[in-house]
Image (cartoon, rainbow, N blue to C red):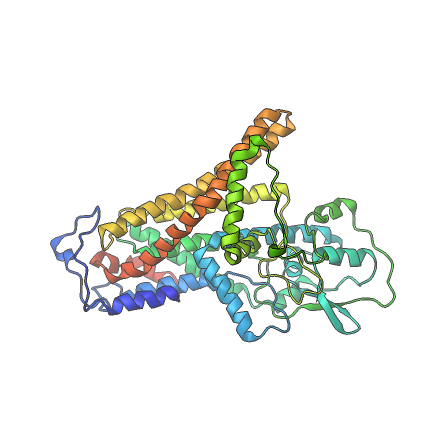
Length: 474
């Protein structure tokens, strides 16, 4: 919606303000130099500015609102609070979609773990998602005692203090607001958009910055949909689970299955809330050989003191704080609550997210030869595209370094393992402290240029690929 407001503002200024800068790396024909003063007018067999805005915003909506599956709200949450929470998720899906993918992957691993753990009770991955969403509320004497978390649920089941909830996958899906039609519309819209952008590039037609950015978001959307395909959408009410007045017989979960959900995964579910950050004292004991890494990490601590609110939000989204730990009697799970990855799962995440992020940057590199209103805007776009593509490759090197560390350690080559770990930590700390702010600036540069770039459209921008019009879309 922010993009729409900015784009419409600049479109309204076209009649009084027009750029005279020459295009970059592209030679226009004489008849193409003049840009129509009324971009809303329809060119011969072409499209209008409104058509571009509508197709892009419909796709962005599908990528940021429809595809993001929030956790279940508390019963005391008002409708306005629920909407604002959805808007927050929509914001992060546009600004930092890789954070949403990280959340989706952690929930995907957790759903698979829980589904396997309770397979003998008829559970599937859908049940695992429902549990992580806060789908079960513990009741005692008809009074809610808080959301059941995976570790507490396992403890109560084994002690015979609750009956195992008889909830089928179909009953969970019946609570979901998503169905095959809604998913099909979202997938169809994003697929059509990507196809028509590729077709325009093949036909030699210009692709606007807004379309390139939207196509890149569509790639992230496909990844999110893959990991959340079985997760119920927009469920509003949890299922009550009642404490038994007389505990029943104890159950024993298979040891091989129980190991998959050991306390290290959902640790801290029923622990008391730790003291706030302002009450904690941090003392560093740093060996001399680890000084380079320690200096960078201490810089991160200083940054967290300067910007505690932002830092804590990032920690929650990254799964390193309260997003994983549910304290006594929570009315709902945290917004980014999910399973804590094991080391093997975290390695998979470490390779998947940077790969998708690098593809996101590569799509923006496809706009290298696009027509920009000014040379400065073209240069900023190209620099941002290179950086957005390169930084995830640096994160891939970090993941590879830790893989080398684990392999070398298992083979007894401790010197190699030690050096691989030191190099990986140094690179990751540098990318965190220096690379992340620049990465955010590059992302904002894309969004800003995608909006203001619509103030100058050439006939090539308004031309259409004829056959793409016949593919069903919104």
